[in-house]
Every structure is written in C-alpha cells, then in structure tokens.
Image (cartoon, rainbow, N blue to C red; front, side, top):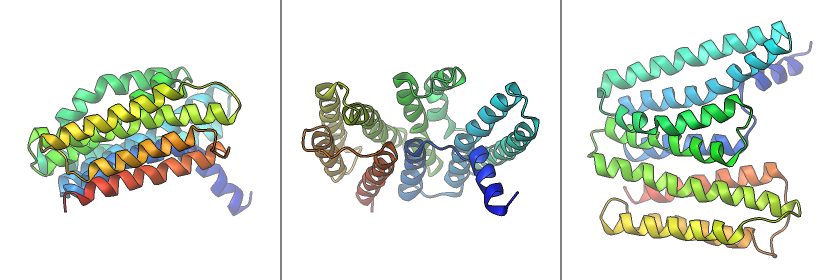
Amino acid sequence: MTAASLRSRWRSVALPAEHGSWGLTLEPIFLGLLVAPSWGGVGLGVAAFSAFLLRWPLKVARTSRRQKRSERAALATGIALTYGAIALLGLLAGIWFAGMRPLLPLATALPFGAVFLLYDAQNRSRSWQAELAGPIAFSATAASIALADNWAMAPALALWAVLVARAVPSVLYVRSRIRLDRGKSASVPITLMLHAVALAGVIGLIGTGLLPRIASLAFVLLLVRAAWGLSNYRRPVSIKTIGFSEMGWGLLTVLTVAAGYV
C-alpha cells in the first residue's frame, strides 16, 4: 500500500467529511478564545474539538465491526481512544485552571447534544433535528470559555446566543439552498424569516449591552446572503462549495463579533 493510500485511509477513519460541521464546531471555540483567552479556555477548547472528532471514528468502528472489517475497526478504535484521551485531558486542564463554573453552559446544552447523538446513532445525522440540535449544543462552548476567563454569566451566555442565532438560520439556509439547486421546493419564506428573527434578537442583546454593536453587521450580511442565495438570481453550485462558503460566512461572523470586544 502506498503512502498516499495510507494517508487517505487514515483520513477517512480519523476525520469527518462534513464540511459544514467543521465550521459550526470551530466557530464557538474560535470566538471564545478570541474574546476571552485563558489557559482554562484553551483546555476546554481542546476538549470540545477532540469530542467533535471522537464521534467519527466511533461511528466507523461500529460500522466496520458490523461489516466484519476487523483491521479498519481496530484502526478506528485506536484513533477514538486517542481523541477520547485528549478530550479528557483538555477537560481536566480546563477544570484545573478555571474550576467547575465553566461547565454550567455545557451541562445546560446536554439535552441538545443527546438529541444529536440519538439521531446520529440511527444514521440520521442529516435530519433537521440533528442538524439543529448539534450546533445549539456545541455553541455552548463559547460561553464556557468566557466563564473560564471569569466573565459574568449574562455576557457569556450572550456569546452562546449569538452563535445559535448564526447557526440555526444558516442550517435551514443550507438545506433550502441544496433543495433549490436540485430543483426541489424549499421553505424560502421561513428561512428568511428566521434570519430576520436572528437579526432582531442580536439587536435586542446589543440594546441590553450584552453584545457589541458591530455584531448586527454580520447578521445583516447573513440575511442578504440568504436572500440572494435563495433567489432566482443564484447560480447552482455543489454541496461542497456551499459547505466551504458557509465556513467563510461563519469565520466572518466570528471575526465581526470579536472585533466589537477589542
């Protein structure tokens, strides 16, 4: 077996292929560490990212055992154990530096995480329930990282809220965009309405002083992106292109919000 094929084999076992999930996972970690850097936050970020990676080799190991592919199952199990150990060490480091308080948002997010894992175990991770529950759960990481930097609870939870406001409409936008590009019907008015509701919610948090004013700019741009991308003027593109594009929009949102805390 060539080195290139070995790398490809390892990558297929170790790294999830869904481009959109990478963005929605990294955004809370990135935002949290940009606005509230601390060693405890780094530990929690490492734990969260490792937990995200852990899901894929566990799934591969389970499928490979069912298919009696013992060598692939052993590789996946070894990678899963490595991710699990890193996640545990990161969590312990976070607790060591910041105490138990930063775990409160993560505990609150557990029901959403449970919904995602339930659907994922049934190979239904592409269902709307799973695609909404996963980002809602993972967005809590930003609040935990902020608490690790001794933020007050309300501003920390506002970080969670702004990421949920980014993620939920965006998930529906991607689903609608894919359906339209395939020539199917989609709930365009509902998707646009949710973008408008997200913008209104962010403006409300700005009004209470929990978010910087510039955060609204990102959500205006997201609304414009959705209106154009779901219009008759759009150009059909591949699912991979949509996924990478959403990663870019997520990065823009994170950097815009973070700029308000400088």
